[in-house]
Image 1 (cartoon, rainbow, N blue to C red):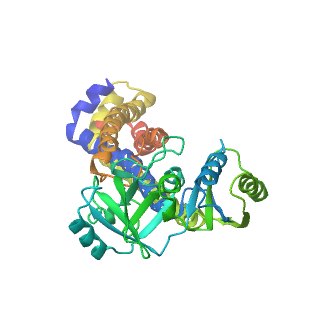
Image 2 (image 1 turned 180 degrees about the vertical axis):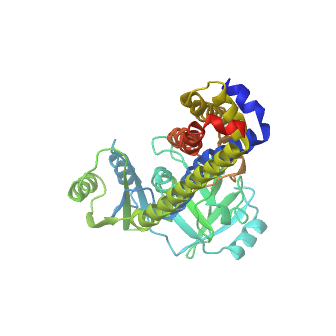
Image 3 (image 1 turned 135 degrees about the horizontal axis):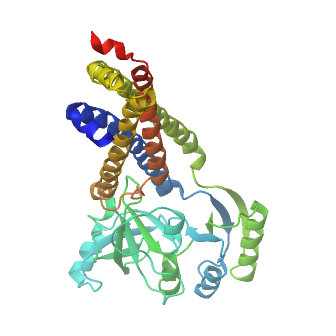
Length: 397
């Protein structure tokens, strides 16, 4: 009977369903947009400042140039509940050029020596991409220190044209005519605007120690498990230095920028929550308006039903039940549409985007469908009450 009632006025049913579906999809999409916005804000911040929480522990050591001691230090800096990367300062005396071959003819070497230039370089270990968000555009990231040491480099998107994937970066020093070839094995999106190179400091220490002259560095400590105090971090790094290269810890501080975007994230989530509530209210008002308009059109029909013996409850249920049944159909259709929309989002994300592909917002869908049911009841309860109060005698007029 309720289904037949919906078929009596297809245009009314369509408009009511459209209004309801807009409310459901709008709530889901508002949550989806908020999730994508949050992911973008977090992703871009993690590209530059590291994942939260990340701490920078400054260290001093005179034995970084000793391959054996340096290798021991890298193996010592391992904690199960944290990702730890070693960062060595940029050496301003090193210059860089590129060619397609590691072996150069005298003429090619002469040309490369004339084209050497300074570039921003990050001397680090393989765990660096676990501390910072570095989406891989092509190739691969630096190899783990447990593997056989090798010379290798990864470049960012801005440096990929000058140092193409598969080519060799030739590193020179100001006091020597020798060039050290390092293969480019990957390209990443690091969020930086200037060209940058990432060199595997473990490989440099083992195979090209003459390219390392730093006596200081930083230990980047990203906690992904049990939180530890600053004193525990300092104690662990100090012990690691004492057992290997020697040296001291000079400073510790927070490296990531999560505190900067937490306020912005809260404001963003509040804005989208407010938008979803307003959309829901608009949907409720639309349903009430459609319900009252429909009641005016169907008043003669409902009066005849009352005159033929229909009870007030049956008339009210006819109006209320048809809205609930429509809400069920609309919810199913809206969920199917929203699933398709969420599934299509990764297709529009560029390769190497810092935004994580969004998961389907099941909780938001539950709230939206529940809101649709409540909306259907609220939107039809007033017309249902009004319909139940119609007097059969009015049908004789």
